[in-house]
Length: 95
Image (cartoon, rainbow, N blue to C red; front, side, top):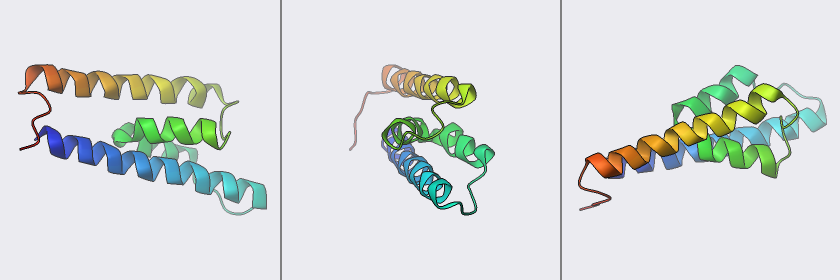
């Protein structure tokens, strides 16, 4: 079970990272943007690590306080959740 949760979190992180990069690219070109609610949704649904990495790597949305505070808080909550699963299950047994 834990294996599938980690795979899910990895997939959501890749999606959140890609969304941040795509939105930054579109911002530079003056094109249609990904709504901020959608960026937060990707992070809330498990993509905290990717959203946070994308925010700082692409230097995107770092001046908005709700991103600068929200993404790290969500990431920490996700991390605590994974650690709690590790503690209260049989560890990271993948087989």
